[in-house]
Length: 392
Ligand code: AFD
Ligand code: MN
Ligand code: MN
Image 1: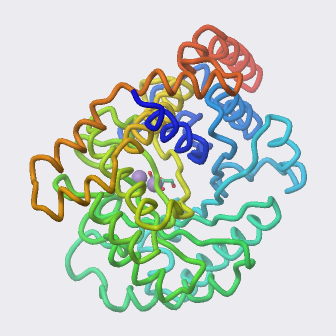
Image 2 (image 1 turned 45 degrees about the vertical axis):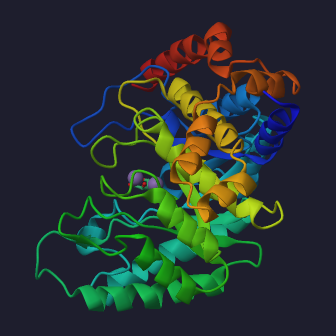
């Protein structure tokens, strides 16, 4: 590998930070139930401890995303949450409102035909925005489960307008350094239509909200044949790509480990990001990268490190694409040369530069092996098993 390639990889890894998510360390399971694990986090302190361990091992995960109703219900004051995060060497990252569990939201939250329920949901989001300010979080990231289960249940256009009205009020409540990310999902839990079903709907709502709003692309929120890299290219070109939720999927929103099913797709997504920088004088877009996965079988700690290291590896591979050369092939109509350039980068073994980057920062060359050797998982499993026993 040339010195230039080495340097490309190290430069890419230097700016590639990935936010972890609190619910990735707990027992989440599927709608068919969950298999409980001794090592699953019990409270926010556990989640921050686990996040801190992952950051210490990988060197690229300084923040933990928090879910308002799952992480801020232990009576801790915002300043105590900040101190707890600092103790574990991380910060609170994005704040995620929860508009999908309250019984009142059976027919929707911000899109509900009942103005009283819409008002309740709006209050929760405004409170979440203020909570974010209190814990020094810059990002509010909203996913809604709103939608309908059968044709005719409600007016799609009326729901669109209700949502637009609510979102406009949120942008006004943002602090000047806060951004609001709006996530889309074409299916589930609403089984006929979802109110923010695709990137275009999220884009339109975010655009109307204002300059501090952007689109959140969850890699599991697309139909089987959709080319996510095309969506990413459009959003980058419109400067409306707010961030990603990383996971992989075989059938639906399976929330599997990133790259475990289709690593080449993630490589092509990152290729668009690097390509954007290459055509903008090396300026990378301000994108929030976050993990959003849930595991019923894998230990959360191991699944998290698998996803983080897979993301680093694929981002490093994509950094090897010479966009100047690619553009020449594209403009000359050299189809096979252009494709081979991408596939050569994707097929390059970047483990050497990756290990060197880590060792240069005092990290183990392989974070997964380091986690296993540390026996951290064994320690938290026995500790949390005892604590659960005492709680009974
Ligand atoms: C579920 C949703 C969505 C959301 C996440 C956290 O599909 O991805 O971002 O929960 O609330 O996975
Ligand atoms: Mn998501
Ligand atoms: Mn999801």
